[in-house]
Length: 270
Ligand code: AMP
Image 1 (spheres, rainbow, N blue to C red):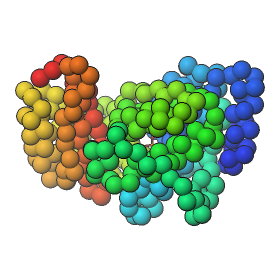
Image 2 (tube, helix red, strand yellow; image 1 turned 30 degrees about the vertical axis):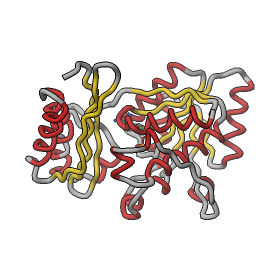
Image 3 (cartoon, protein in one colour; image 1 turned 45 degrees about the horizontal axis):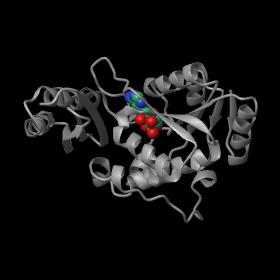
Image 4 (cartoon, rainbow, N blue to C red; image 1 turned 180 degrees about the horizontal axis):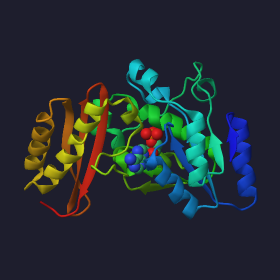
């Protein structure tokens, strides 16, 4: 696996792959790679000729300096995961390379960025989109793999690609969960054992929401489930229509000091 940290070197590496007519798979991450990230890399490796993982803890998408400072980082461990999952390239730029203090341009989205995380974390998706746009501009034509765990983020990236004509095909991948249902997240490294146990309340809330009679009942049942967990503090729940007869349930909650999100597709109309 080739490791690069400058824009020029990463761009040259992927240009060389395409010069050999290889389809590039791109997996953007913030590192602290877990089995969820691994599934994205493995899917990209199965569908593309070469896979590039990027690791960049994007300061523009954090709304709290403390959350940014506490974000886990271990680039050598990440390199081992990426390589074993089938990546051929690892791009891990420093902060000055990707989001220098002199950067005065940003991407602003409406539409897909409104509501849910967009409402709860003002500016978050603009920060995501600015750095994803930059990664796409550096990487060039590719297939880019994102996780459905961040379902609204996938919609934001699809809108970014459509509106700005990036030569990128966006692929959404299923959420990878722990045995007890908790959607894997890099932020779990910051949960105490008690908080980790309490964090299963997000998935439990989605399940009671899925079993509820209608959207209003689902939202009430999800909120009640989170309220019943003493270590959890609800940020929001939502039941949003999706497709002809489906809907998607969303939950965001604090467990101890850590904010977690999850979502679940419910296929049948209720
Ligand atoms: P992050 O490093 O948290 O920014 O995530 C990088 C990519 O991995 C994003 O596209 C996430 O949606 C995806 N991802 C994170 N957690 C999971 C998970 N548990 N299952 C599937 N994909 C995930």
